[in-house]
Image: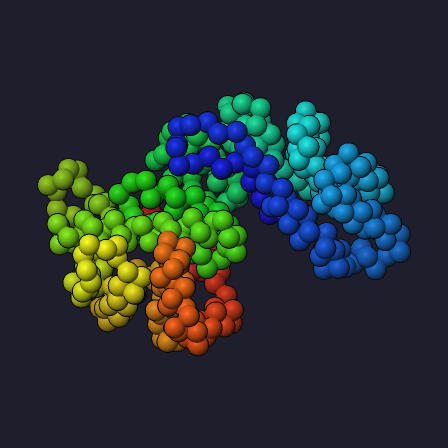
Amino acid sequence: MDFRYRMRFLSLGRRRHLNLRMADIVLWCALVWAGTGAVHAQSASRSDDAPRLRLLKQALDLFNDKKYDSAVVVFDRAYRLDTNKVEVRYEMALTYAAKRSFDSAESILRSIVTHPKATDKFYQLLSNIRAEQDDTSGARVVIDEGLKRFSTSGRLHMEKGLLLLQARQLEVAVDEFEEGIQVDPGYHLNYYWAARSYSQGTERIWTLLYGEVLMNVDPNPSRLSIISDLVYRMHMRTYEDYRTTARMNYSLARKGAADASTQVDITFEDRFDELMTMGASKLRFFQDFEIPLLSIDTMQTTFIKEWYRRGYDTLYPNAAIERHKAVLDAGFHTSYVVYLTQFAKPLEAKAYFDENKKNYRGLLAWLKRHPFEMTGKNKFSRYMY
């Protein structure tokens, strides 16, 4: 779990102090130490390691109770039993950071960050601490150092992107999130920040696609609600424009164009807009209202069927679109679209779920049986097309 202490986005230029996300920290620790049976199975089989594991559990309990001073003492005792476990020193630094003793946290991290067993999150935590002390340039230096060592770290590309957002460098920040997606497709938070970033500009298509990826892989309720609302807003804004332009322009990008008059080859984004326009042409609802969730389903169902009929799936492989096709073939597409957009229109979503309980429950069971995962085999990004 990430040391995610900052929520500093929508007003891109406004400096927001980093907020300690204690729930995230506790959950991460729980995943590590509650799973010691798996992570340390071989160690636990040795009687001489049992005392260290008991101390780690005790330290976690103290941490959960916010008894940070005591937790640090116990973590230190556990570390002294096996000084090769540099991860325990990291946990001590994390505990110091949780109680905002940043000098102590940084001192520990400086002593272990170059250790052969150090990981990318050591640099992430150190950078966060520098940023918390208003040393953004120092934070950037730490991240760059980390990327030299862990060039395929999605979390470090994300951290660099967030620092660039703070500096109002939106386009460069987006490039960092995109780089993180390409080199580490399984690290989901780059999809989150990329989706939010794209929602500020003209490339709404990538808020949709990355947002849908995020909603399939991230159980965090606060992120899900934000992305669900953004996904709906992208459809709504695009449809509002459609009323005057007669085209669903989820993207205004034209690759290879020297100027607005230059003709270029048809792009992935062009194909996407073309078929969503076809779907929009089928809508019939009172125009004084916001676009209904079921109208979005109508557009996307038309889009998916035509996308595959024309063979675009082979030209432009895309895991988010493939997910729609799989759900459609399983018979749960309407429930899936409502599921993706439910936080934007909760009353409408609840009414649908109440009236279609069997189908919605079928969708949830299907999603559980078919977990979604981004890997090197199915990864996609804006710059791949």
